[in-house]
Amino acid sequence: MITISTDKSKLQIEVIYQFLANTYWAKGRTLEQVQTTIDNCLCFGVYIDDKQIGFGRVATDYAVFAYLMDIFILPEHQGKGYSKQLMEAIVNASELKDCSTWMLKTSDAHGLYQQFGFTELKNPDIVMERLMK
Image (tube, rainbow, N blue to C red; front, side, top):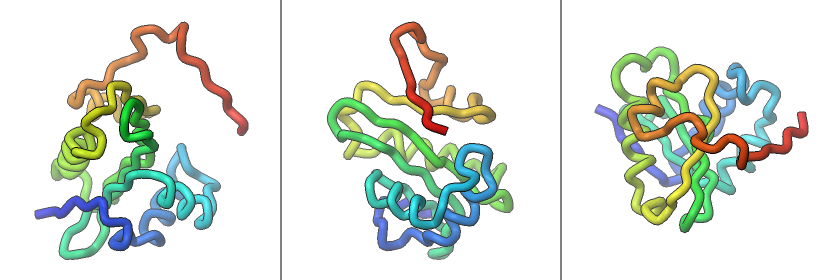
């Protein structure tokens, strides 16, 4: 059985950093940058017996917009439904209940996010981005 918490004091930063350092989306992110992202987002830690096995964060204004980022379950714990439980906790978080616009980027987990109502952009012609790297 897992526990999901938004208590940042429980987060095991080294676990998060080590996982993200090997992903396609966060490769090259420094430990200091990982800490900054945590400091400035609503974070969800996933635990088994107080050992962190997963993570997710939401950049949000808590009223209108929520952007999911860095969602993961450690490889040795994947395939057990934990990512679905994490997503369930995130989309049902009371802190985010007023957010009417949710977004994320993914190259490989469309099936997971579709289960929670995420779709391709309905109007991609009105969405813009500015990439610096």
